[in-house]
Length: 212
Length: 164
Image 1 (cartoon, rainbow over the protein chains, first blue to last red):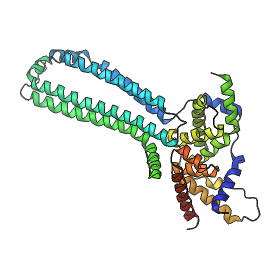
Image 2 (cartoon, chains in turn yellow, green):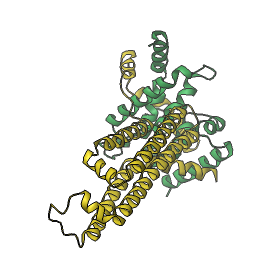
Image 3 (tube, chains in turn blue, orange):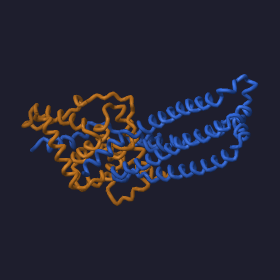
Image 4 (cartoon, rainbow over the protein chains, first blue to last red):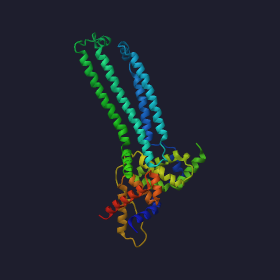
């Protein structure tokens, strides 16, 4: 008999070594909470949606006044409506993916579905980052072009801000803040989704390798 | 919650709990993690149970859900320190014709199996459970031929560890 048959025999006879859980032990477990990866991905994305929506509402009124006086109030309004429609679409897809994941699928299928969920998350991330960059550029450009008007609207003259270098300083500040924020955003996504899905990706690669 | 369904589930899981214990033994390194994974598998089994039609055996269905949980759904707790507890695994070899070296070899083999990656471990596990290659391929979602080829490669790898 080779080693494997021996191991198989030993393996099958080793059952008495395990702790024996009672009916009640198992019953108690049904009441506890799951910590599965899919559930976490779903909850984190929902939390994220809530987070972004809250941020939108937290924008101070004074800022909104500036956008109105600068003449881009309407633009902002319609952009926001579009933005929320796209958000709603993402929520729908997240939910659909979450429901489509069946623990009774074959391992490969299951992993494929989870990675598909991740793809939706990734598009969501791309969309958010892209939207952030695009809107920053558009708003900054408008403000830069109309820097004289902005200077008046923000009442910098009374605050003693010199008019000469205002436009340049303004645009540099915008870019610097934008880049820092973008960095934080990317770090956040990398930490949350990257780490959560790393092991899964490796396992999926292993399965793909077998198929080759 | 449906009491009858609950009772039926818990009774069947109680009977077949060794399957889950074995998977936990392979995929975790200490008793805390073992219990964590056992619980997660129980929850996943329970969530999927209403869809269990009974067209396969309860245990067959369990293999799939339990392995899927161990490989794909379970977040390994960061607390667990990577230690190999194979020293504590006692292979009780009763037949007189086996000597200590065989027991040593089995220990070595067991520790080598624990060091395999998640997928290879699943293959070996199903093999040790005496599952056919058809069942193995269906559970993992690969073809039967690939399962066979892969298993032979793993055997070869383990053999090299045993007889360097």
